[in-house]
Image (tube, rainbow, N blue to C red):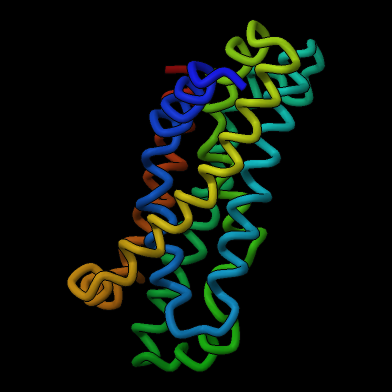
Length: 200
């Protein structure tokens, strides 16, 4: 196995997924104290990233599941989830924290919510991965895929690590219910605007 390709794959993953650490930390903070939330968040991250890989690999072979014009509209997923989270936070605040029982029952974000945000946020990743995969060949593509999937676990660990640092955990416990919707809405709008969804 070529160490050069492994290094390139690790570098490419880090550059294209640096923002995911913040999102993961927010998800882990949201799931703090709920049994099984870590497992659900990691599962969701893997599902979302596997979908990104599948689309990128298929496109590298010439099959296109997502027309290029549709990629900017992936921003609607985090935008909708952000608006839903903002509505829930506003409702909980208005009811004087009465939504805590509901949150405890839910146990943090679901795997599908995490997967949807990961996939939508990875629209630009697909654009970067396709030409790299197309020139790497099947063997090289396999190395990239393995390195990426190992690094997803490292990213999940890093997100959980940051979310559980006392200072960060305290800040996220206090502001996480506001930060998560804001970050998701910002990501959604950024994907829509940068992709030219509004014709700008």
